[in-house]
Length: 329
Image (cartoon, rainbow, N blue to C red; front, top):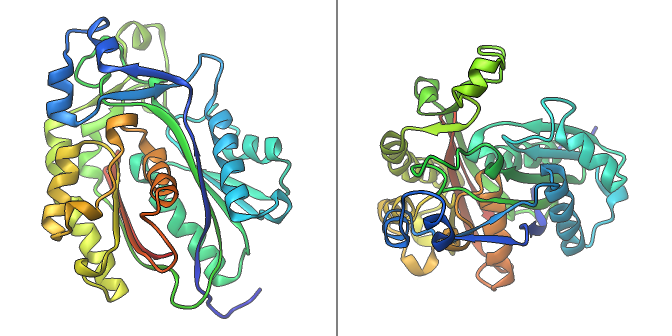
C-alpha cells in the first residue's frame, strides 16, 4: 500500500432520473394542497417518480454508467463502490453489491446510510481511501426512491420528495485540487424528528404496524427546518476554515436540495451571492442522497463548475446528520 498521502477528487459526474414527472397540479388531485402552497413554502414545482418496476439499483447503474463515461474510466478500473441510500433494494444484500454485479466490476462494495447527508459522507470516505492509497478508483453513488416510503395521503410530506440517482468517480488528482476540507457530524438527540418508525429491530413489521402506517417516512417539518437553517451555514464555514478558504473564494455553492428557503438562509449566512448558488429543487424536489450529486452533474454540464473552480457542497439529513466538503475542480 502506498503510504504517502495524495490528492483525491472527482474525475467524472453523472446522474439519472426516472421519466415520469409528477407536478404540483397532479398533487392537487391527490391530496388537499395547492400549487401556490407548495411553491411558496418549498420552491418545488415538480419531481420525478420511479416506475413501479424500477429499483434503487436500477437508478444507481444508470447514474454510474454516465459518471464512468464522463470520467473516461472503464468499469474494470473501479476498485470500490459506495452507495449512499435510505431506500435499498433489500435490507440485505447491500445495493452496492447488486450494482457491482450489474456493472460487471471486480470491486469491493458497501452501502452507507446517513440520510440526505449520505452522498457527502460517502464522497469524503472515498477521497480518504484514494488519498491513503488504498484504492485508485472509487465509484460513489447517491440514490433514493423516496416515493416508496412516503405516505401519499400525508400532504405535509408527500409534496417534498422525488426519486433519482447521482454518481461520481473519485481518483487521484493534481496537488492543490480535489478534496480540500470537510466537516461531518451527527446529533442523535434529533433522531425522532425524521424517521420511519417500524421495520427495524426496534419495531419489527407486524400486521399492526402496517395497519397503523408506521412504515412511511414521518417528519417534524418545523424542527427539521430550524436545524437545517442553522447547521448548513455552520458546517460549510467549518469546512472552508479547514481548507484555508473564505466564502468569498467559493465559485459554486451546491447545497442539499430540500427547500429554497433553507438554501437562501444558508447562502445568506455564508454571504455567498445568489448567482453562485446552484438550485434545481424546483424540478426534482428532495431526492435525499441523490440531491447533491445530481446538482453537481448539472452544474458541471451548465459550465458553472469548471477546471479550477472552488465548490462547496453541504447537506443535512435524518440521524440527524450533516456533512459539507470543499472541492477544487
